[in-house]
Image (cartoon, helix red, strand yellow):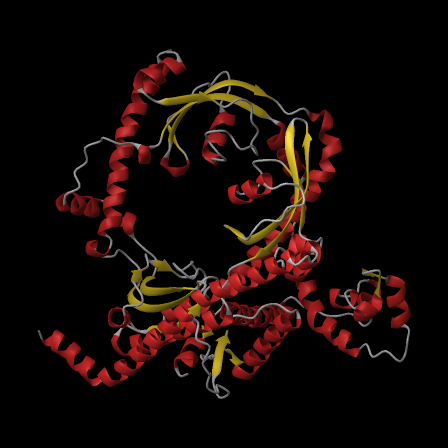
Length: 610
């Protein structure tokens, strides 16, 4: 009762704030539904005195972060790309990671003695100019980089090359460091030979399998007592790394009624202009949002039945040659279609059609309105918590994540560095500012943080129950497979044993170690066991492969690798493995570098001051 009274007092104290914010949310809801054009983006406060974070004790100033973020924004705008809240969220993460990565790598320049030679920058510029130079229209002929034009400009004393030299001076050390790490990769002849064998040796086997997960009609005691007993007997199995659980609400970015009306207006305008006799191809080039065909007047080429979505196919094959359809909708958007020609080829009816595609997407006004609603929920949640905020407004349903571990994806938004840092450093009940995803806005509240170890049963009861059921099913399936194994050891026929016990069985046909095996997949345990069998040892033990599936495998035949083509394929195999290992070596090295670094992200603290 005391706890309830405290909550009520807090609500009363905050009621004036809640009333006004709830009123704002109501207005926003009306805006989204009816498309009223009077909402703008929220303003951000000056953060010039804040430190955004640290990398191994070295500060990332707000000025550095903000300048880099502004440059990223400018790049998007200069490219002519659409700039949305999702773009902003992605750029914030991308900019942060780029700064952190550069600071980590710069430290490695010293320890690994990465230096630039006296004339190295000039030689690189002369022989292998950066892409930004190659794309410059001054050095292109017919849209392609012209080395001769570039070389002439390079010798021109009136051209100031210092900006390009500075760019290379800043970036070449990173390339050299990458090359240094990759140069540590080497291959031996036995490794190349093994890869050749893996690609060319083949085996054919019989197999029987049971997937315990799919087993039904098995009586299992799932009472609280049984779950508690299993938990106590298998506690170590439930030991966990530090994790968090968060509540979150989702605000999907969906087109409003106003957006739909705008699309209909545009479609009616285009259709009327076609009715008035304007050229279909010209209108397609002007209005169609199918980038792949618009430049060709919307033409799709010839296609038979079964290639297009049903609505499109029906329109195309029902119209006469030269006819234009009324606007119609498919999963891709709204279309106006013109049949250019029809023919029969190899007894198959073919249509050549062009179309104008208009997609129904959320306008900037709609996105801004949804963002404002999410911001408002966030403000209320800061005062009374996310559950109460959702209940008061009635505009969002609260979901709860499964346990989230460091550097893992988060339900809803996916991977988000800032949100993860918040989750593992904030207090329970803290709310993170609105996060923009690809197709929704999210608000998250930290509900619980687990510091690792074995959590109490009440926190993982459903997980324990699921594991217990799987263990019982596996035990039951193992009993069936054991009967089969004993019968096979006694000389019984493989498929007769499987049929008598109701076990799924089949033959693989020949496959190598790299192949996808029908009804098996790429299961490495299955493949490794199959290739270990031979005429002297034709029967495997009961093995457990992917997804807890139990197998017994019987050897049929093996085709050894034919080494007559080894010398011919050796170079290609060497280059492929070397390329993959070089990339993998650098990625692994850098991943370890980042995991071992002490990175502090203060962006969350800065955001909540806004």
